[in-house]
Amino acid sequence: MLRLVLFVAVALTFACGGTAAAKLDLATVNQAQFPAEEPKGFSPAVLKAEILLDRARFSPGLIEGRVSENFARAVSAFQAANGLPADGKLTRETWDRLMATSASPVLVTYELMRKDVRGPFTRRIPARMERMARLRRLGYHNTTEKLAERFHISEQLLRRLNPGIGFRKAGTKLLVPDVGRQDSPAAIAGVEVDKGARLVRVLDPSGKSLAVYPASIGSDEKPAPNGDAAVKRVVRNPTYHYDPDFAFKGVKTKRPFTIAAGPNNPVGSVWIDLSIESYGIHGTPEPGKIGATFSHGCIRLTNWDAEDLASMVRKGTKVSFKDEMANAGDEQAQ
Image (cartoon, rainbow, N blue to C red; front, side, top):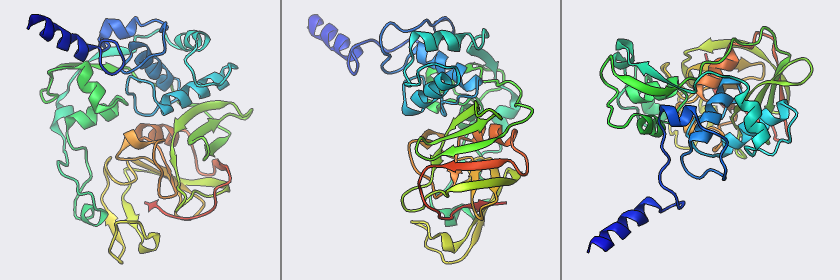
């Protein structure tokens, strides 16, 4: 009987990948070295690389601590910007170059503040947009979601880094990524929206990438535009205006309506208005879907990447669309 219990325990430990669950604590992640084998599941090395990529503005989107398509895109963009073969694989040369970008620890201790736990929160947000319009604010659901977004991390990984912590009491100490980015570039040449790669790039005058963000860009039903546009304005904490002409699936009303501001608003925490009517670059209430799903025609980033981009663009900044998708309009905010 004892042998059977031990066998079951070992089988559970080594299921789904063949190795024990990765240890993700302050020392293990900060001291992580180049992995000898391709990481599977949660990985201290991948988490360290994700945080350094985020700091360097080669955003992996939502930091999850494991290999993903967005992680591969970020690695590839970093490689291209540093003259390395852009295969999206975390090679030894890529690792060494990435480690050289910052010597600061990637995981740090953060003490919960009263404003973190105080809210205001919007506990329940309806799925249907018409019903969202009845709310006064589209705030975070709770402290966990608020903290996860602040530190660019999935809620699952935030809990994994802080087992047994409820995120409700001021003074509680947490383990979080240090995602502090350097000051924004003083001047940029323009923004490139790569529809095929699902990326938004900020370029310098030579065409080199200063920042790269994963994006959800249009769909077959409502594709993003072609050609060039320009930034008209930046609206922070925008409201969302639905026009019946958009004819979104699941929206039954034939009347226009407005959804209140907040990070869980359909266009997130910032709207970068473009010169093509009803098009913009904006945030999202669902960062985990960025780069993995399509949008209603506009360019959707995580809230933190959209805010970072908004800090760089100005009225008149050129925005070029790269790829063959056709024109269609969809979202607007003000």
